[in-house]
Length: 449
Image 1 (cartoon, rainbow, N blue to C red):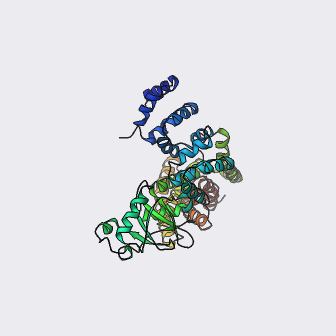
Image 2 (cartoon, rainbow, N blue to C red; image 1 turned 120 degrees about the vertical axis):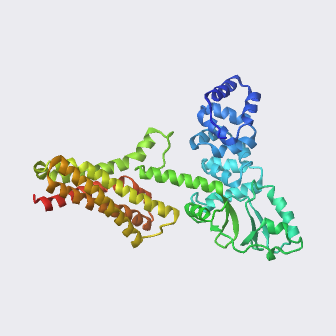
Image 3 (cartoon, rainbow, N blue to C red; image 1 turned 60 degrees about the horizontal axis):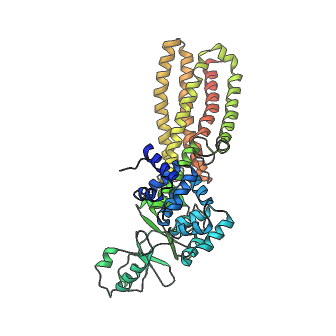
């Protein structure tokens, strides 16, 4: 059942904090999942959250840290000494520990690393800090179970028992050679049903999916999603096994990418959250608002240049908002499907067949919409020629919007620019300008002004 923070629970926790009743507070929180406690931290004042953090066992607080909102975690870590932070990180897997250390200042980072008790754990964390956070190396953890291809089954089982003590969850058993190069994976079923004297080289599965340390995190997510993997091994430039990426890290990547694309589609140029400052929000939103304003000013100049014809055929101006809105919707729909296809791998590059399909949809949709528009204009205003000009313009603008919405994301993707930018203000504002130009251009040809 999903946990929900009640007002009564928060009040009870705050009361126990003010009474400094550590024993009852600890008993109350120990019954909750660490992710639920992190959610409670987000609702408390930072002083109250820090108070709770310091009275709980490090085994619990270490699990809470990665679940906290970035700003809350930053404030809590700021109130802890290097030794206290190191005690938390000693309890964490290397990938989570590296992520948290990466958020610290350089001086604090060095202090914390020097305070880590487990030397091997510290070395693994330092190794992970070398990799960019948006690559497989930045995602991977060092905890895994691996066996040598030259061992027999009995030796393998003994080594696995020893290694598994340091691994929270065993997803796969990887097979390496004497140089630590990844050779394959081992089936637990084969291991249990094979004679203890049998060499591992005779039973392991040579086919294994893997990624390199510099593989982009989005590509890692795509591979794991495609092959339905819970974990995937990571190798270096020489093919040596250096870590593994697990599904929990990939879920975070998918969520972050979805959030980023959603914000970009809304015209927000950088990652922002509800808790960010007013300045940060303005900085993220203002650029596209200014760009949109400039483009719309161009659209207004197009309208002004047709001022005489608008006075002569007054109904032309009435349908400009309808034209802009319809073209914008068509363009965003087309670009959204392309961006989605590029993201999930179903559409990798420009396809003439797909463009033809999208234009066919636009022609049929435009014809239906324009027919209703022509009928409405004729019944309401009785100017069939003007209605014809508006209807034909609508069809052409819809086709243009569909082509723009399809081609722009593909062009951006080919030039290594995030195509999600094409699903928002870029498409709608561009359609406004060119749509109005097409609209009055066709009207001028048909009506002769």
